[in-house]
Image (spheres, rainbow, N blue to C red):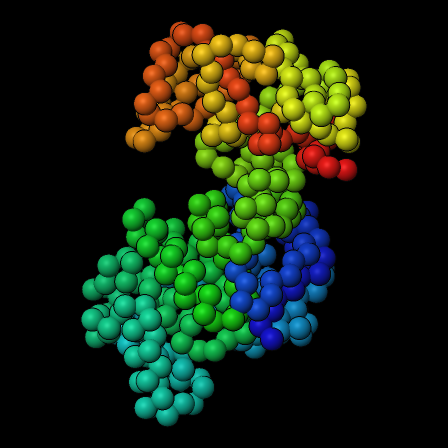
Length: 362
Ligand code: ATP
């Protein structure tokens, strides 16, 4: 069974803890993206799974076998790097066939597999070219083809699309996702691009400073971020995070004070009591402007209007706070205008003083 498991895996470089007691399970057929800012430990985690870096502590299991002591070549994994690592003097067909030479397959079998992978990745027309004669997208597909041509235990991808332009990325994201979905392998993809993670992953592990902060489906990471870091890291434009006080918890509603203004919302948080200091989180697409102020709105001054094509990003100055609101491009607001904002109650996120999410139900 193609699986990857980490059990309390730590990597230290001298006094630096690059990865701290990481626990992860990637099941057969599952794509897990390691996502986080630069230096958070994504690549080190991947390199430990590959055997390119030794774990300082903990266990790494591939296909349910502990592999800490095995060399990379003994772990039966296929890895695709940011730099394609294609052999420059070999043709695409020879590059694709290269990993099979170790398997002592008959010439006909090798030719058959090259043909199948080339068809899968639309490389048939460039099989006789060398990497120097390929476009970036073709090089990337050839690198992926070389990884999948064998039948390894699992796949590891390190920033696989970072060298492609936006359009190619979009196409490749879909292609890789589709390809992997038919292979029943455990796959780990390292990326710092959240769009890549949100579109390709079955689950995302968000990392910060060597720690795994949350592991969940893309939907859950977006709708139920476990703490302030994940809330602020996932989503563009960023979630608005405003320090606030919970002033009243009533039957089916809460009152908050945000930047000197009071707002009443039909939400409950059994875990919180009146007087709590909280962080109030709302995504820029989960609020709307209304013509009249009310007890469920807050008011501010339009500070900046940024057209983004179909939508417009409006910055509303509320006290000291810059609130980002995405509206349809047909909504016209002028800088300096007073505007009133209403929040979608079901999309409001609350975080306690330690930065942890406060759930709607206890
Ligand atoms: P990026 O997205 O920039 O590649 P990352 O999340 O992949 O970042 P890592 O490359 O895993 O991060 O690095 C994690 C931490 O470990 C960083 O502080 C990095 O400087 C440090 N580090 C990585 N490799 C080594 C090494 N060989 N020796 C010393 N420190 C290292």
